[in-house]
Image (cartoon, rainbow, N blue to C red; front, side, top):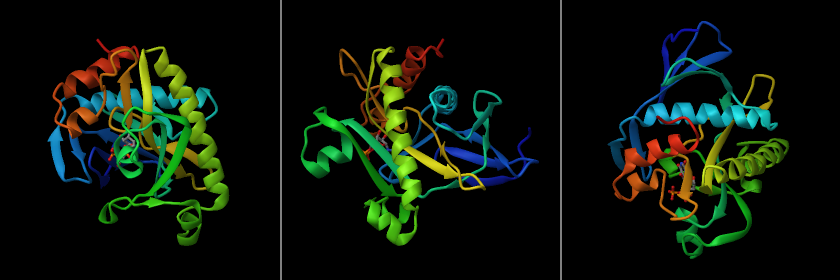
Length: 237
Ligand code: UDP
């Protein structure tokens, strides 16, 4: 399959049409943003890491009963995906407190949560992706009750599969953000990406951060952390 016209350009990826309206091709860039686009930069090699890691995770999740939009990896940066209509929600699961959760609820970063938490944010950059609850989601029609049931069930499954997998890599999964899409027949499938941009990964022993927080917080060693995660999952040099 070949790239045709550019359909959409986001912060970290470009999406192209193909000959077949049921498929698109995503191309991952090295551009990085944080704090709703206020902070901008480049993480050399990030596009390759995110493309390859995300595809690897989506294949693992498919095997474990979570349907995804993954079709075929074309090269280091480009992947064929099923075309979906994105459900305009960021779906966040947390195992330990960090980031906005720590700030909002006054829980120290790294505090284990008594059970994994699920939260939704409305995907709207102009509004700063505000948190939204189920009844508000139904009220504005962002998703139906049945869709939220499916999304919640898949999100917790993704968490279980990822916790187990990353444990074998000596990495602790602190939290992550995923997105879902609707196929033309309305089926809900996992979409977007799973990468160090969208997850918090801590070394199990040292608690060293191996994710985008190194960029957000100007900690240095950003490229090294992304490369280390590739090694840990068995895709690195
Ligand atoms: N996250 C993301 N995109 C966003 C917001 C959050 O991928 O626009 C991820 C983030 O990397 C972390 C998790 O979702 O793994 C929870 O993020 P949090 O709500 O703590 O927000 P942040 O501190 O990243 O602003």
